[in-house]
Image 1 (tube, each protein chain N blue to C red):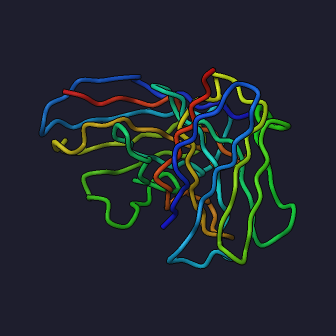
Image 2 (spheres, each protein chain N blue to C red):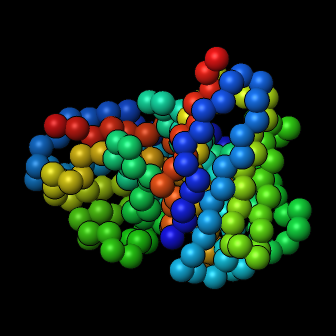
Length: 105
Length: 120
């Protein structure tokens, strides 16, 4: 099985901050990496697919990069609505989610 | 969109069946996933079904023998059956859509989730 790790597990930030979240796969997964945002009591929402492609309707302050085993999600200027938990997910072999990164104030 | 059935409460040892009905997109050109989230925990992938092909279902090893996923093309609905329920199965269960034959695949449409509570 492919294992996914994320760092940090949580972070505190302020509106306007640049935020970077890292995701690492236990083996190479090419660009089969997606990022989701989840708010309490809500279903996850797709932000980034194929490591760096912005999903329709997602603000351009979100960006993704990486390939192989190491990936990054960046929020260029944190907005109030961005306080949430972020998950990475590999779809190279079956599916595995990372443990999540909680972004709060 | 994907619309899921309502919350369920079951006793330990019982079974439960959750539905996920699709609309607004081509069901026959989609794969449907089931993902579990226990209270305060992360997301856990359970299974995927290609509803256009009978028997085309793959399960995470952890859930083999525990869950059964089926689909009904006539109603654009997929089902998740959980058996021999334990308290650890208390969670929110989500269905999610992947467009068939897209690579890399990604879950772009999610149901609202179905809460299952297992309690004596």
